[in-house]
Length: 156
Image (cartoon, rainbow, N blue to C red):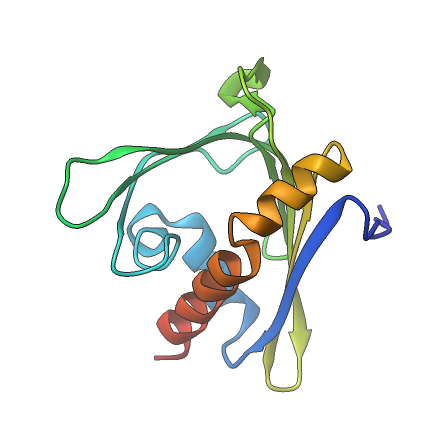
């Protein structure tokens, strides 16, 4: 499936990560690794559910400044191509259940690159207003920061 980026609805982050796609994939699919980079530091992430399969749930919590963990993301995996692509959305909960407040769908791809992994995150929104809200909330800082944290984690 080839997805065309719609600049009115989509936001993207791309970078070369100097580690093989298998390492980046593992960081996306292993709860203990995912927790190390998924939320911008110094906030902490806790994975409560990670069933990396179509229809499986991804549920994370976050803690800032030592406060108790609070809900962060409750999503459903739509498509998982081993080592190459993960698609998830918060429009659905695990088991394909409709979510109360859908916001986005993300397509994360991992491709071979001479220096390691060509890493791309495409985040799609239902309308221009939702996209603008996500950008204003700090999409590039947030997703850019976690991409940097991911790179540092797997390049170590």
